[in-house]
Image (cartoon, rainbow, N blue to C red; front, side, top):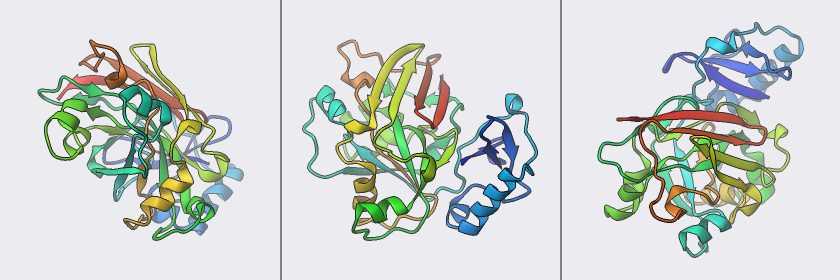
Length: 285
């Protein structure tokens, strides 16, 4: 299934994109797309049954805002330097273990919402990423098979980063990762049954129509199952939590000087096979 949330910010309603590409209203079946729903197999079955029976009313997709596909996210866990090609372009050694950091859940916005350039920023960068959405409480997982059984589905994350704040201003990466609007998410939560191999997905990102990133999850240093298993050793993952799994080569930081960092007015578009497409315009904060 392709689940999403539509409507004005803070007042989104649950929806489903059916096999014909028609947007369907789920508000008569479930209250929201969130961790509580993802952990409730019976509720997910009700959605499937209603969709198959043709009971869901259509929505006008042309006039509705798409919000983040998950409501009430507890935490956003991020994996840094997780692609061999990205490590090469930045001159970094591939890490021996996953690099883990957190983004605040309030950085999450809809997939087509504006992204704000922080005041004083000169190095705002793009990063297309596969995002994992957790469906079952996960702690101390021991096998890759068990780890994948805790995944509800996948979506697209834009892990926007301010490189000066991240690298040159002291401390951890937090200052460059947690600026307002720095995690567009969506458009859809695609349930795990529709993504048989998360290590065989192409990721692409354009800036002002120019292709900047064109990678594949096959380049991940730590694949999806290992990431979930590893993170569960250090923190409990709850239904509705999100894990951003890193970005392939092609970020601005890896380009020759002068590096083409984002500016107000730029348009970024990104997509992952089967997971949809995002589009954001950059604006001043």
